[in-house]
Amino acid sequence: MNSPDTSAGSTSTPRLRASLKTFPPYVPGKAPKRIDGLASFKLSSNENYLEPLPAVTDAMVAHAKNPAVYPDDGALALRTELAERLGVSIDELVVTTGASELLVALTQITSDATTEAIYPWPSFEMYPQTTGLAGSKRIEVPVRDDGRHDLDAMAAAITDRTSLIILCSPNNPTGPALRDDEVRQFLTQVPDHVLVALDEAYWEFATAEGLVNGVDLVADHPNVVLVRTFSKAHALAGLRVGYALAHTAVIQGLLKAVIPFGVTDISQAAALESLRHSEEVDVRAKEIAAVRDEFAHALRDQGWDVPEAQGNFVWLPLGQLSSAFEDACVEQAVAVRNLGDGVRISIGEQEGLDRVLAVAAAFYSEHFD
Image (cartoon, rainbow, N blue to C red; front, side):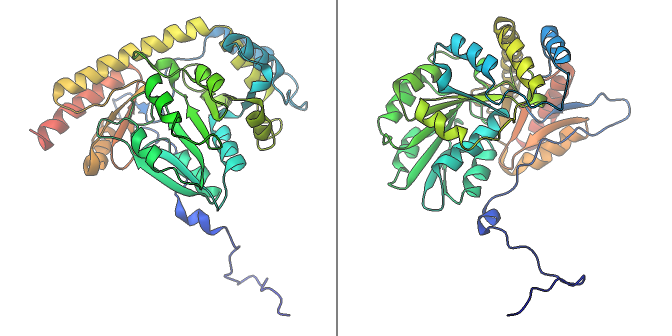
């Protein structure tokens, strides 16, 4: 038997899964370029530009004690408060390191090389990563011209191999939010054994009428799981706290896939305190939504075709001009998110938004007038 070559000059590489070649890695939003005389603005990561509430930072300090001790693996206090506020059983909730871990866990409990996953596109960049890593065949259903989910096409894509469907409301990066009636109609076409994940990372910013209610949807459909996060409206992206609401059978499956002790004591304490100030969080989210609406309206007045914006961001479907627009913003010390077929602009400080509007006006005049 030949022994493997372990010499210092060996050029052999470890054998990695072939599925890794089928999807790109997740790439975070870029930091802004530093330019003398200009304040820099990062509008590329959908972060909340407002700091957490003072009571939340106080709770973080109070719980910064002994890092040698594991946190509560079940996040009992946080789950108890969530259950009371949502009107559900504590056994229908799991808390994880952000919504991202939930997406990984949901794929792990539903998908493998024999299955198919359906999701809208463009949408959150982790969808192809998590489903691709599981080896599942990815069915990316293009959103409509107005940036909305094409639910008819998604329903038509279901086969006997479909194991997971992901919906995103509001959709990141295009902006529109799903309505309750259209989702319920869609679910009548989904087999009961197919798990449907509703990703509501930005739900607090949505202001449209007739929005889908994820909590009610889970109550009515055992195959639906609601995914939410404290990263956006609660301004806790750096602490990594998310949660899922689902029927107990799904939660029991997720508990086998999530990382033990993943959510730190400080993170749990901050999320719990922020949850107890949900009214203030909601007020701030709606204030950001008002700025978003003004920003989107200003872009439309310039002539841009801006889809319905319901998150804390606005989408410009620029196609091949996306990189050029990003570069123009970079030269003004503003980072935006270039996703290849469009640019996503997160809502931030007014000065940064005004600078983007100036870039957009000049860019529109140069390329479209």
